[in-house]
Image (cartoon, rainbow, N blue to C red; front, side, top):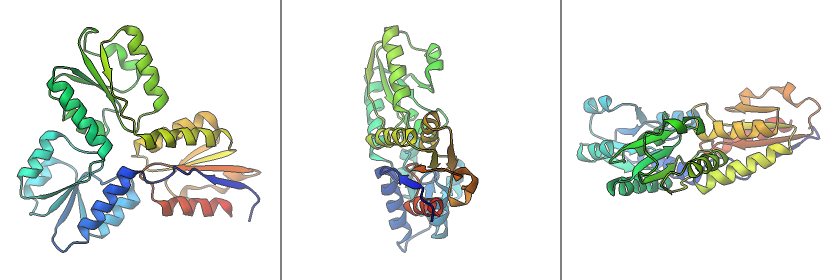
Length: 284
């Protein structure tokens, strides 16, 4: 054993929404009536998705695939889907299991109500992320996705038009605050719904603090996980020797030569067993 200190962030691993979605999926595939589907991966973690696949859950990635599928149970993933697609599923021959994260559902209601009363909708987030694409599908009028502050000049709404702002649940808190400061300074007429979930804020704050006191920082997550990539960006600013890994197989022993303190955090879709395996490997 080495004498290095290995500290794992208390907020690392499954968040409430992911844990709930995985539980729904597990309960669904444990029933006798199938076949079983999920529209998109239940969560952004290959280990979890493969485990559910072995238990009988098939991932559907497009609406075109739905028309040829035999009747069965279909799960709406944690990221949520558009209103039109949800209605289509509920009107079809599928039995729908809705595992949309409650925090995402709240955003759906917010943009639906705000756009119905005439507000323009500004969504701060990644336009390619399924959560954001789903949110867009609940807007009933003009909407725009703002990826970062550099895109602010591209906002297609006039400053006098009423605008409701929501934000992807896993967006970086500091980046969102900076965007709001700029928009306020520019004089936009806006109603702000800070929809970054509390678990994300706590995870980001703890990761930043841990990285600032670590010689090496490990961020565990899938490359497809938005919140994991954001954790890496945050940690890298505080610790030069920050590494993004998926599991213990990605760990390189030379990273820890003469290292006294190693910090570990993980994205919201990372199972506890993977975190523990990395922790044990680093301790050796």
